[in-house]
Image 1 (cartoon, one colour):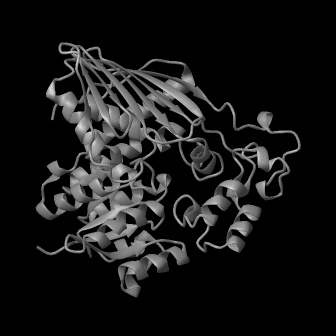
Image 2 (cartoon, one colour; image 1 turned 90 degrees about the vertical axis):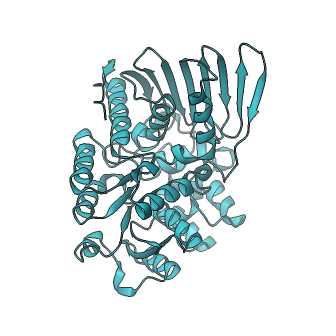
Image 3 (cartoon, helix red, strand yellow; image 1 turned 30 degrees about the horizontal axis):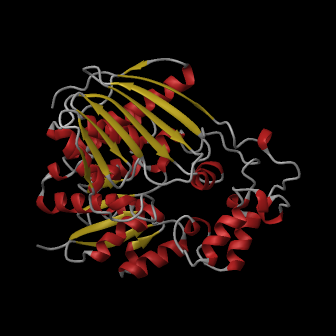
Length: 421
């Protein structure tokens, strides 16, 4: 069987990361074209994948204009630029892996679903948490009935103080009007994951949260506008000079440092921090997304769940507690502990650990799991291999949108019951 041929639209960290899977599995997939507006990134990507010069272009429309020159496309553009290429490549007959979120409003999400269903092509949305060995082991426990009926779930996403500062205070996802809400940008993973574990989307949601800390009101006395010249930087945990400089000193030439510089030198980093967005004081940015949020959910049948997202921690794995009628489960992202009410026994389940739960670490095997499933689905023509298809992803996106409406309006939002398949 010939390898599945792929185009990559957007050679940022996500597109580059997914494409590396093909380099590790050349017998299963090969990247034959890339669209990336940044010349340095485009050239580096084309060299890494040995892409013909004519197939490395600045804009995805140049690839689409050539018709169907590959089996599938990985769309990894910024969040607001997902819908148009998804519609265009679907119409050309490409199977699509679309980085999350699929789109930022209900109408746009439905446009993507309509496009792939009309064209009869497969869609896998980048909900990589569904594909980790940890998730598969946890879901197997839930589906086995060992916990009885699920009554309630507590789920925590510890974003990490440094990740919040990097991506959601200084970075691309700092503002709702230029990107999207924090819940959609970061935590659509988690509402989707809860839906996957429970086996159905919620029917009612409420939410609370706000931007509390990263505001001018909390700026230390004497702080400068830029970290490289700030007299209080030695005592500030959010100092960009300390964080990114430390990565460079340790030779960690990866995300998130790779977002800031293409040339991993002190000179390039110094210039980026003096002039670019990532060197700004976290208390003097134009950010408006929340730095903490909770979502309360009720599922059909009465099960409830709470989700907490907060910036104020060291980061790391998500944590989950599931309370059932016959047992309790605690998961820390690496080990799953099950307490049986009848026997009083506790059993630990430790799935294989396939990297850190970060973008640089491949999301604990989720990135590789998604690519493995998507490529296999395309190769065999079997969409059942995809765990994050269009209808499931639409349901979880609608839940995210409803939760954000609830936060903004102080309401309890009701979601329509999805039709049977």
